[in-house]
Length: 454
Image: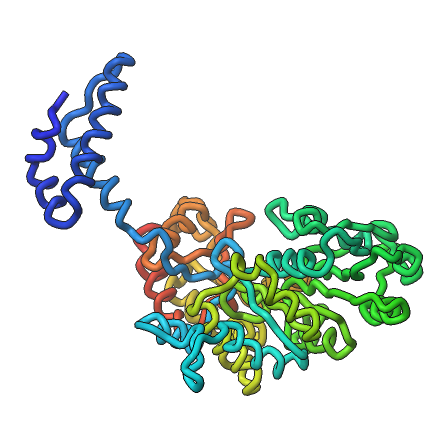
């Protein structure tokens, strides 16, 4: 077995030492030789020096490759959780970059010259946009709900429809969130049917709130009955109990205008008089990851003073990005500026034209077919939009027998990686979820695959 010095003296390792820390390289070599020693004691042969050197180089270079990298999403899922959900507008990115260069007035009042609050940078924009009295931004929607329940319902009862005791995803469930907050869950109704009198009969002197949880990631069909937010508010007003509205994805625009199923609009809940509304900032809002809480000042003020606020607060970068995103809505330019809504509102003939250009990069191999795009990200379950897909059915053209999964892998290995979807031995690429300014990258990548396919 080679010594550490023998490996370190190799020319390739010496080049590595010119770039990366000496101690790190030596530790990597030692760890690799330790593994070789264990393999020898188990009866295996020691690999040649070249193999050990190659593994050291690979491990070190992989360590210093940035783990997060840009990906082109051609899957047809707009809010693809695994791909980072909502892409940001150019203005949001510029705002985040601007405050990253140096210092900023995060918690400093420039007029008074004294310490300020980071909440003021986002609150006025949210109040103007939603019509709420006050607002607060935390790191995600689950933490927003947790904060609200902890601050306003600890050791008290919160009434929820049994059909709304949902799992958000990844085993995060409303009953668990409520338990951690210290609030007691009181379920009413049944899985498929809940009525306003179910809420009314469950109210006691210990009731802190009525909670509506929007079932944003699934649908129940058949014999069902839901209590509308208007009906829940009427019951709450009758008994002087506040209503909290967990909107999930959150939305400022009418989704039915784009042929999608209705999604609760934040402004509507506020106008009806909910005490607090909770929603995500990185889904249908189209901003950076955040949880947004809007509603009545008396409740928001209590949340701002709760100890959890410091643990859940967001940094200057996300505040800047969200502020720029909200400005798009206030200016009436969300459809042109916010990538999520650019994709949702993209005309079918535009998608068809782009798909044709993509397919032309591989004539005789790629074709254009009808398909469906989805919102994803736990938003609008079952809601789809017609689209045009570029389809690669491997082997059907007589130009090769490579499976669609191989072509999909080749595209994922491209720089930047391109992610499509595979079904029925066919690779599909959806232009709807790719910004038009990325078309040239797609076309060049496809043209470069001729050698793989032919």
